[in-house]
Length: 395
Image 1 (cartoon, one colour):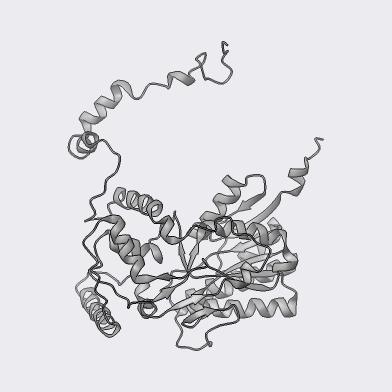
Image 2 (image 1 turned 180 degrees about the vertical axis):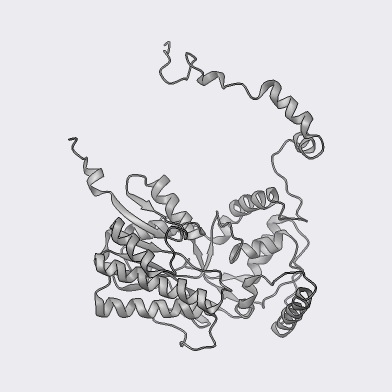
């Protein structure tokens, strides 16, 4: 029997719930592409393990017996009360119960939706738990409280990462910050639906896996604690919107700040119109982010002091939402244009115009031309040719 190497002996097995989202996808990419020998990550989808089903969670984790578990799964932010409770709260708690039984670390992702407005909010700050909260905020707040209780009374080894406005690539659902990008790129935002000086904290998804890696290696320091995971400097929402507009060289949105009462009235009017349309068979809905319209007019910034005082060292200290704008705009505009989601933006992709025209107007001619010279095997990797595995190479 072959002996295992030291690296193989150290490799851990982890389970990630929510692997299809922006955060989960970034974590998977880190462990599989950037740090391939560090840990094996299993990311069961909802068909294999439903977070609404306690038996699914228990059976899967007890069978796999991972060394750690991460939960970045959430429902849509406009989900009804039952779905939000079952996935965001009950699912999170049942994962914690299994992690406690297995005596393994549990990394849980929460949200700034659990916090009140204000500046420099700390990890101890929370909204009061009331019926008036949105289903999303309520379920996340309840999960934070229960996991803390389980740590104190059941010995659960957990860490909570509280995120604010998350940005990064590979968000396929067009939500949160990327809904803002989409609205501006599609010229669907004529004016600024915020007020001057409104500040928010932003969370860089690219940095999250580095912190998780560090937290797993330093459990004594991070166990049982909540950390705000945000960039150090808050972002002025109005200035960010105008910066995106400048990058895209668009005429709108105009630098006109719409007062909140007018914006709220407009949102309610559109909601009434959409309800009327459903009566004649047309189904449409407001973007779910508009349920947080009030937050566009209220400052909410989170303190990053606790994490900065820890042993974690920021791997990308100079990276901000502003510095990543060109990269993100290139990625998302290309993606949305190919999906025919952007209707007004004049994209400038490096794509042969003649090919594009043939593809749209004369695909058969394009296909015939491709068949002439672009379907033969690559000569460089054909057997016996230079570059083919096993081929002889001359000095």
